[in-house]
Amino acid sequence: MELLDGYDMADLRVGMIASHSALDVADGAVEEGFRTLAVCQEGRDKPYVKYFRSCRTNDGRIVSGMIDEVMMLKKFKDVLGPDNQEALRKKNVLFVPNRSFTSYCGIDAVEDEFAVPLVGSRNLLRSEERGDKKDYYWILEKAGLPFPEQIEPEEIDQLVMVKLPHAVKTLERGFFTASCSEEYYQKAETLLRQGVIDQDGIDLARIERYIVGPVFNLDFFYSPLTEMIELIGIDWRFETSLDGHVRLPAPQQLTLNESQINPEYTVCGHNSATLRESLLEKAFELAEKYVAASKEYYAPGIIGPFCLQTCVDKDLNFFIYDVAPRIGGGTNVHMAVGHPYGNALWRTNMSTGRRLTREIRFALEQDKLEKIIT
Ligand SMILES: Nc1ncnc2c1ncn2[C@@H]1O[C@H](COP(=O)(O)OP(=O)(O)O)[C@@H](O)[C@H]1O
Ligand SMILES: [Mg+2]
Image (tube, rainbow, N blue to C red; front, side, top):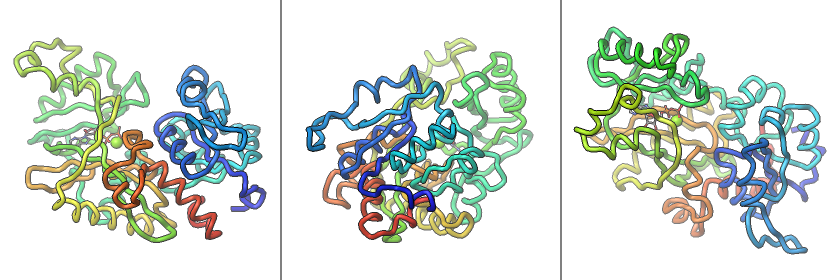
């Protein structure tokens, strides 16, 4: 908040790591009248530097694109360098945390070293680190929310999901499924041998009940200004190589060799969805409980976008298997066009990025920036 005293509020920029959901945030920011700044890493900068670069008229009106300025770095984590932080503050940047920010910079540095105002709840970002003492499962339990129960390796008597990091693609998943203890040990051994997972990963793995049913990522927004919850959209994800597997007939799946037969779960795209209306009531109840618990255990609680990642079982029960306490990774699916729920609520195209930056605008107009910045 002290840093904001030095800011020129008439010349704010919305900044973010150029990855994950950056395009949605930048698109929304431009719609809401802000300039944008993308923190790029060399070698993965083209979409931002070249292809979605903004073009404006002399008087500032947007003609095309949405990335106004770029900070080019060798590595994303260089954004933590004091000079780079200083440069962001000089440009009056309000920074929107996404998953790439926390993954590449590290949660400790995000909490203790990044002296730039964040739009969102900085302390809650840690709850996403699976295995931490007060991780999202802990919050879900406190909130009385349904999540897939944990199962010990020796007690596997139904299909389970084993969650651990990929050994080589360190920011990706080395997830696998098993329906009994024997299959668990045998698959773990195969994947260890293939170098997909490592022993450290297995020791810390979370084994939980596999929910057989469709996936809905509920992209919610909590406004600290109105104290209201909004459902902006719903997405679900394309994952490799799982989605390739399900497009093969069963007999062909069974012919896959050892290196192909266990699907990986790396997100590579998104799609849009809606819920049957009778499930909406339950969906909002999940969000209400999550918001209340976040306020109680992680004051000031959730600020802005969050994503409840759910599966729905055959009896139409929701199970939350992951919570993103920040903008979700699937919101590009409603970038610029919005989503049926967000649009219906706001009577205009409303994506998560736009809703987030509209909140910044409202906070500025009401002189309540302190409610959305940490
Ligand atoms: N308990 C579960 N039952 C069924 N599918 C699950 C379960 N947990 C995770 N998944 C599947 O695995 C994917 C990734 O899980 P998630 O916990 O969100 O991992 P990450 O932390 O990598 O985002 C989900 O998109 C979903 O398809
Ligand atoms: Mg997830």
